[in-house]
Amino acid sequence: MNDQDFALTRNAAGRIVFTGKEGDVHEGVVPVRAFPISAPQEGVSLLGEDGHELRWISRLSDLPEAMRALIETELAQREFMPEITRIRQVSSFATPSKWQISTDRGDTELLLKAEDHIRRLTNSTLLITDGYGVSFLIRDIGAMDHHSRKLLDRFL
Image (tube, rainbow, N blue to C red; front, side, top):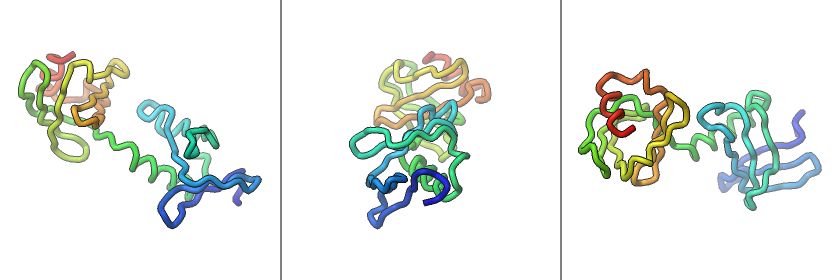
């Protein structure tokens, strides 16, 4: 163990293993962020396979580097959420509508099945869930170009 009261490792099958200070071992641990958009480096819960919390981590920065890297790698694999940087074109202003977009991970297309699949998180942040279940983030509407904002306004 290190100066923490628990340890995290990855087993041969690639699953995260939690070992508590009393020697209790839990395989298949899943890290989950409490606030993935507003405070991604704060509030991470380590959940056992049964869904019960094994440990609460207030700040990832408080962890040793190796443990923090393990958790961040696992979170990155689970939290695929491209950030929309530009809306190039929409097929229709009625839903369902296909959107041609640019994201921080490249250009793609999303299918907006209903207007209520656009969820406002803050005044300037939106979460859009497409017809295939992928969530797209617009971090700051005001930072988008005029054309993108104009297209988006038709759905808000």
